[in-house]
Image (cartoon, rainbow, N blue to C red; front, top):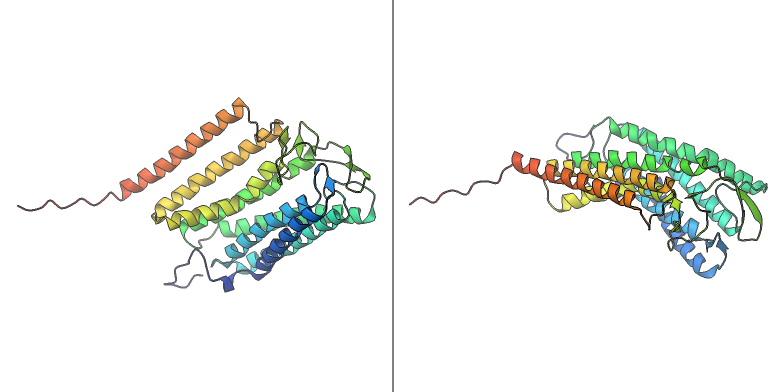
Amino acid sequence: MIPAGRRPTLVPMTKTWHRPTLWVAVVMAVGALGCAVAMLLDGRVLQGAPLWAKPFKFTLSLAVYSFTLSWLLSLPHRGRRWTRGAGTFIAVIMFVEVGLIALQAGRGMFTHYNSSDDPLNRFVQITFGTAIPAVFLANVVLALVLSFQRFARPDVRSAVRSGLCLAIIGMASGYLMVAQRKPVTAVDAGGREVDLVAGHSVGVPDGGPGLPVLGWSTTGGDLRVPHFVGMHGLQVMVLLALGLAALGLAERVRTRLVRVAALGYTGLFALLVWQALRGEPLTHPGGTTLAAAAGLVVVVAAGAVAALRAATAAHPPARQPVPQR
């Protein structure tokens, strides 16, 4: 329970942050820098992309996620033994996962969906097959524990709860890549032929033209787009709560705007999944996608206006006194 008279702040003291996830964030940030240097020094490519691009994206993404998770776990709430335990478990899994991704990159081999009979690769695939569902369930535990209690301010609660749910569905969207089941033979950075049992592109082979660094396909659908957008919904929602608080808006207004944004972000995620599954590249949306996006913008804008108007109606501006003659 939160002691009476102590109002939770949006950004608690750093010394109260969850240490394992905070340390993982630091390690990932250093790893991202190392992978960036490796991209400059190592000229090998994998499916047309720099070999170290994948570990660079993973380390950078998980650095941001771990940092946010460390802050989240510092908020006063009940069941902290459960949430901190889940956070420590997530930190360990993330560290192992990125370590294996870097190991495979150093060997010039594919990380995911690699069915080659190499003993170390078999270990990597088995570990991924076990660790990824486990970290997904750990995030579900966090969301459940924090969904049925009061903590922090209402706008922060809404941001954290909706952000965790977005992160969970973003993680779950990764299974759409596995479900494609499109076995292909590819060549790794060492010139070895490898059978890949799944992939992320829809309508085109993996490894075609893509966006710089991100690598998202510019010729077909790419399921990595909604996967990325969903996973980082937590950071977006928390930053939104911070921004609205900095603007000095009333708490009730901030809470309503956060909820409207959460619905809009969920709609964006669904739109990106739908676009990718239709084999349409992010960079070349068709008329149907543009119409759906425009409709989503209108709905979110209407919700934001309604939230602001409701707040104005509840707290009308004070009338100026009429001067006496």
